[in-house]
Image (cartoon, rainbow, N blue to C red; front, side, top):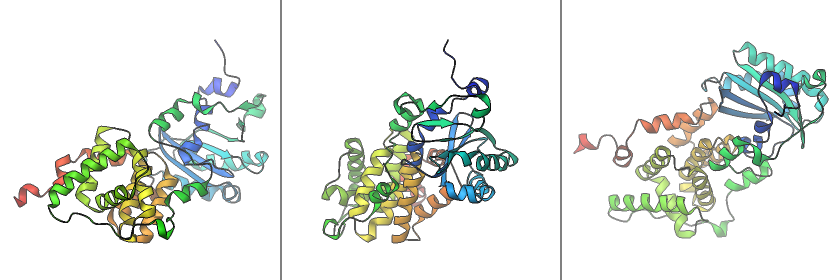
Length: 333
């Protein structure tokens, strides 16, 4: 039997390496100079947070308290604290120790803490254990990475690439208007649900007609909620396609439909565990309409550190018919 080269891993039986190579997929891009906190409940990841490493060094207790507050609704019982490519790895142990103390005093066990460079990982206890350098494995060897890829996660190279995914397209590439149902509203809604789902399956770059359809569909609550219910309850794994379709459409849609598309895009990112993309989509959406109800709901969920599974619990309490026609349909009949 091959023993792990790190005696600490052999003692704790927790190998951080498969989780460490998943950080770009969890955060949404390849972070540097960052403190990444992976909050867990057993083997389940419930919240992932990223803050500037320089802030963590300057005020480790304040940064730790901020992360603990974000996780208060997640049911987190453990945390992995990672300094990602800090300026000076030698300074990482002191800051991580203080941050870990705040988590432990808040009732959250620190399951691992350490730092990574572009190729290696290390724990503050590795020096005392006489560990040789630990090299990061290939992402393809991590079951967690493979799970995230199947869920639609695709990290960008930099944060600027993520911002570009939701930035407005040049004026000449934007649609001047979006037309919804001219007549036969219920028939249009049925067609819009079917067409939306076909686009999710195809997962191709939307053309002008597709953008117009997606914008009108997300703007119509009955169509939007029916599609979201289907994707949520069937476990079809279509959130990555929803993100790509809605962000491409949001970039080209008129301002009147940006919030509706941005809300659905943010929901898709949240369901993929990508807080960065969810936050950027929400920022763009709320700039267009600060009072959009789904945007407000998602903002409270992200700020409160609620896990993505909360959305599944909400949808499980509804039927597709209730989403399509409203709960008061029978009473109105």
